[in-house]
Length: 125
Image 1 (spheres, one colour):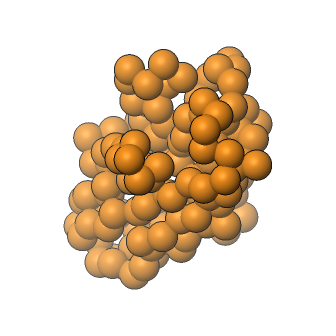
Image 2 (tube, rainbow, N blue to C red):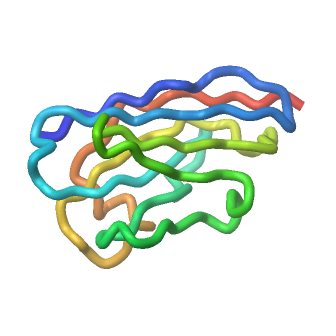
Image 3 (tube, rainbow, N blue to C red):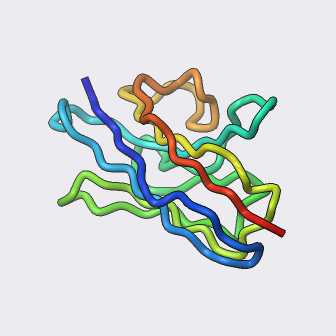
């Protein structure tokens, strides 16, 4: 079992920044990688960013490319999502997911085995 806890969400004006954190605990001795997804009211969960299985690259959704940056601190078992130039359409609950196998693509939410509880991000215009 991998336990994920997100933090760092909040209310910010358009153009502002937030940094989300996702701390992992539990079965952290197993190999796994993480990704960020978000879900706005009435919409499906969508991909935001994720590390590749090898860890050598990072994938981003086109809608956040150039504005969001995903990073990690292995010593703390924590990944981050730095969000700059936020837009009202970025408003959503942001979820951190962990996957235990390579799978097909880190962009698919069904590839993930564990999820955090989510953190709300609200961007006002």
